[in-house]
View 1 (cartoon, helix red, strand yellow):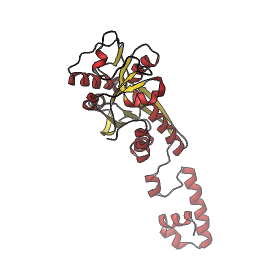
View 2: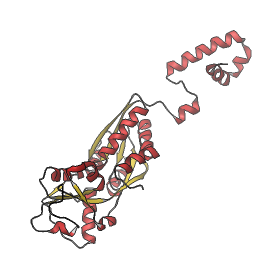
View 3: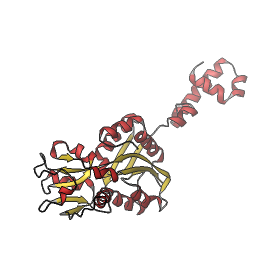
Length: 277
């Protein structure tokens, strides 16, 4: 008996019992035709575990996730032909404000629980956001570290041009927490709206150093040099992710979140320098 015939036998037991073999074959062919027309070619149990996904998944994500999420987006599209993942990367606070303001999105991945709370407090998230990675700060200096920056305290040297993320952005809040823990006062030449903007200042030699994430230093390659500092251990950021309440493509959004949290997704993220939750 064919797979389609077996399915027909399960769903129409009375009819199958009443007809002969020739009628059963004809009925099976009809059933197969109906299935293909409805777009369901798998059994109910298979379809529920691996639904056919399509359409665009819109992901709002912290700027520090750009490289790793872009890679995961390509992998998702490969695993689910007919889907497309589009990203909006930026400061978590700005993205959160856009979501609460009505911007259409399916997934939000923030660089701190505080910025995620902007969305959850407004009731714009589904369920409880889950932490999928953590990130630690590092000092990015010019290649070769010409100013001999060896500690967080060194950033307070007179004449050194240092850039920080804005205090409302997770990387800026974490940097301030590290400075407070060390009783250090630092006046940057500029506050940037996201971590990539802060890093770019150093890459373009418009600043001598910036406090960014380890993942950003790693992504920049030989454009900057990283300097670790012990105070960063007191300002590690948890990264939560959530499905959004009015997600236009909720099914595909859930699948993307599952990929991020899977062993495969974690491998990509840890390779980028993120810490496991």
